[in-house]
Amino acid sequence: MPAIFALFLSDITLTRKNWWWSTQEALEKETPGATVVPVILSSDKTQVTLFRNKSAYPVYLTIGNLPKEIRRKPSQQGQILLAYLPTTKLEHITNKAARRRTVSNLFHACVSHLVAPLKRAGIEGIVLQSGDGIQRRCHPILAAYVGDYPEQMLVTCGYYGNCPVCMTKRDRLGEYPCRAAFRDFGQAVNAAKQIGKDEWVESCSNANIRPVQHPFWEDLPYTDIFRSITPDILHQLYQGVMKHLIAWLTKVIGADEMDARVRRLPANHGMRHFHKGITTLSRVSGA
Image 1 (spheres, rainbow, N blue to C red):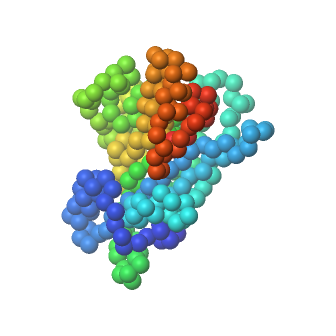
Image 2: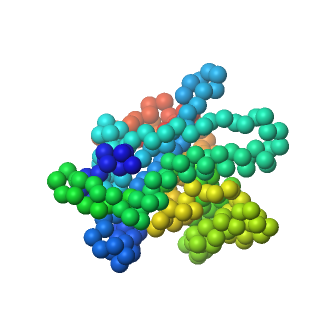
Image 3: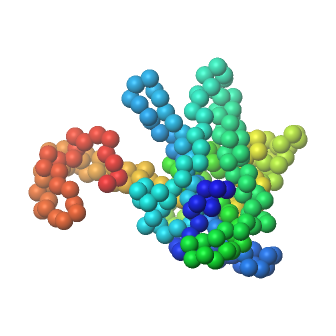
């Protein structure tokens, strides 16, 4: 909660407008005068060193009230390091299926401790003073969780290969437009709360989620975890689309011709010129 105090400002950037206004209207009906503070969490397992396989698992927090020009720049300190999650591989568990279940349960147990203050504050609200000196009764609500695809499936308890947002079959993910329905958050919560009963695993299977013990989002107010997942621009667009197109074109016209055409591109402001071509590049970033 101190992290939200530190980040709160009066400048509201309307990201995810539909969600923001619908949540604001729902709060206004129950507690007039409420102000929504969208909480944005992000996490990604990061390689720290190139030797001894050292890694870290940071979780960052920011709020939607900050303009995105501030949130996206590390120098503006719009993101706060909330915690480091365990990176243990649990190699003492020899059964791979049991190990995967334990890793998922460990992740959700740790994040549950991080978001625990949001359960009461999201309903009752907390008084925050913004940069203009006005005090408001604010309701911090989880609005978005940013992560790559493995992270998205871990957060939503989905099966790897499926869509974390809708019920599209894995063999139809490439079809456009998507006609599949969104995942039912209410059904997923009801299935998760069946833990300890004989029908728990069957209920989770019917909701198309893995049987995880107490997902961190099951008691968060005004939160739909399936609508909180954001597109992964780096892996799904830059690398998922551009990398595929470059590999396809290289196979069609050949690496030499591909590099020759890239070298012939005229210089332009803000665009990098690859005078040696691009087919030999490795570990290409989004930029």
